[in-house]
Image (cartoon, rainbow, N blue to C red; front, side, top):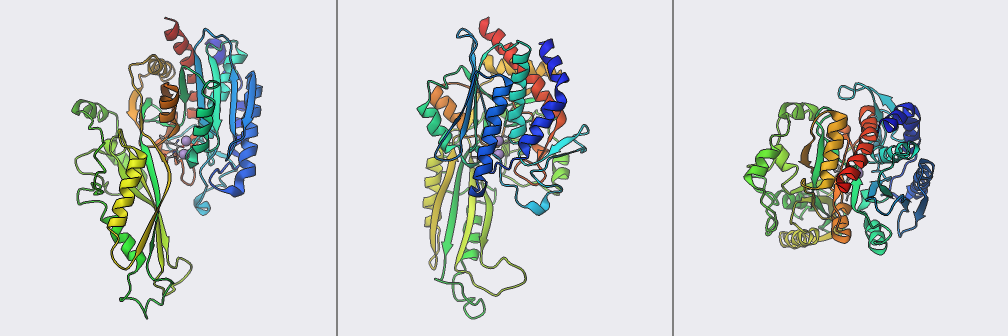
Length: 463
Ligand code: BES
Ligand code: MN
Ligand code: MN
């Protein structure tokens, strides 16, 4: 392992330069205007796998953006690790809130990242974290220390629901056969508090439309006499939570697994400062479901959040108008054993049932995803734990995350394999927000830790 680590320290500058080049390509999967850039990014990833030492790398066409696949199979008697990641990024909007252009990476020091952090869309989610695997792999191959067969599966549609990856995996189960999945697309608690993600929430995402009168009206001439769809939509949304901030959609909690007191106690032992949490967000109070801590509210409890809302006049100045339509995008984060389709159905029925006379409503489902929980009593988890212990000098804490990576549940369902979520970002890295960044410390710590994972996984598998 020493030769691998030496190789890494000798090539740090280049590893960074290459990531910066990857970050310069705007691979925004949600916006068709970027389709060409998304493809260029896929080609960049394919070429980087080739120069890192895979035997074969391929670009697979899908109904959407291409999937990059690469493999190096050294010995059928060795375990096979499927490395998953995504090269697509969230839209960078709102652009005016970025301190530097989102696709022109710059390195700046921050209080949390005194060694510097790379500011760019995708720096942490997930180009930076995905690329750590390419560079760790290169370092293992170059040092003749690759101890497992490796398959890379890097998609370009994670941020839009991974629908085509789902199709691809089901059609190519044999090609993708593996003993486990390894991914870095989550976070650690802090740079001095390593953790391993053992849970993800699921997702049900819907768009709603409320229609009042058949056209926009003069708000003086008609106001007060005709239902205003924006007012109505606000009422409907606020009625979906009670005074304890529990979700009042009938049946919503029916399938929620109740987490044991012991497990809750354990999870609340993780280091967490409410004061720094509030300071970081510049809020004077936190709000959430009664009876649960912040850590619980963002991991073992489901949510309902408005992600965006619009209608009427939102341009400069004032325009007196009673709008014909109001819209909102709403996400529900799900926990075991809630099913995304069931929740979408429950939401739709409920939303239709609470619509008052005077308006018509329409619910359009977007993507969904299943929640996932990974066990800690496996060789896979143990190897990750030992790897982090080695590079951080501390035993990592298992922690459930509030985010979603829908494909993780699919890997388990379709391939029957467990995933190890060995993330290195920080929750404060502003993924999906303006000024997303990724610490240089985190990038290199990831590259250094991954080879140890392979080392221990190989060792534990053989014994
Ligand atoms: N990497 C994130 C998920 C994540 C972030 C997990 C932080 C744990 C900690 C992923 O790219 C993501 O953003 N997923 C989406 C869901 C997807 C279906 C659009 C999400 O969680 O909103
Ligand atoms: Mn991600
Ligand atoms: Mn994301």
